[in-house]
Length: 143
Image (cartoon, rainbow, N blue to C red):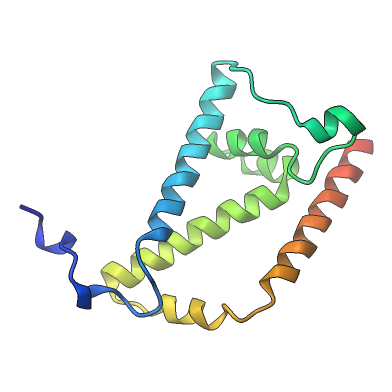
């Protein structure tokens, strides 16, 4: 028997959300953090960046695994230094999960607020963030 608070009812879906995808996204983030941390602690071999191997330059995601490992060890300054975009994406997933949980269990309306932001030009914002992150990684390599 499922406890009443966890029972799924068609009328229980808060406005602004369409399913449990924020929870799955958060669980994926946790899995990534734990996996990266254990890979570093146990010195497991990780795949190398083919872009960096071929060109000698870091790709826009270089350092993301090390940043995840540092974040899992609560060394946030190092994580941000290694790959700011990966940290920003992790923080966004965490914020999305908190908003989803607050809507579900506390009755807040963050889902509607976020749905209102869905019309923003996210493609261009994401592309600009990716380019800025790559410029940062290229500059940090020389510094």
